[in-house]
Length: 141
Image: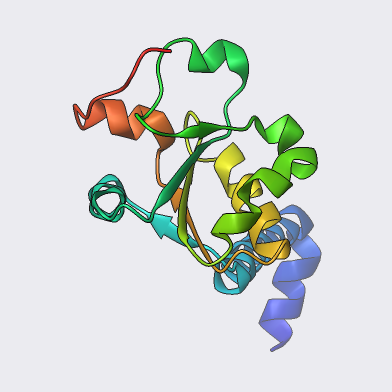
């Protein structure tokens, strides 16, 4: 035990770095275990969309949507989701697939939806970028 204490005294930056990385790992895993929405890879998203009950929500900004979007998706930018969430109230129990460009903003949107009481919320992993990489069709606006 004395060796560990001596090491910590002589290498404080290494010890701080270790505990910093450990804290980040714990924080990331805690968030992953406590999120109330599911991650949907492209293949799972396609299976979900084959079911007519799935609602697809695009949370990208208007200028991004001009390049194309998944056919049938409802466009509600993340910046306006909190005020426009009422448009989705009738789908509270339906499966909802949310996407953005890469999957980061849609994670925030999924959290907002689950906090509002939506039961079956899914985040498209990789967003529209993964969709296009898989050579799946997009509709021009």
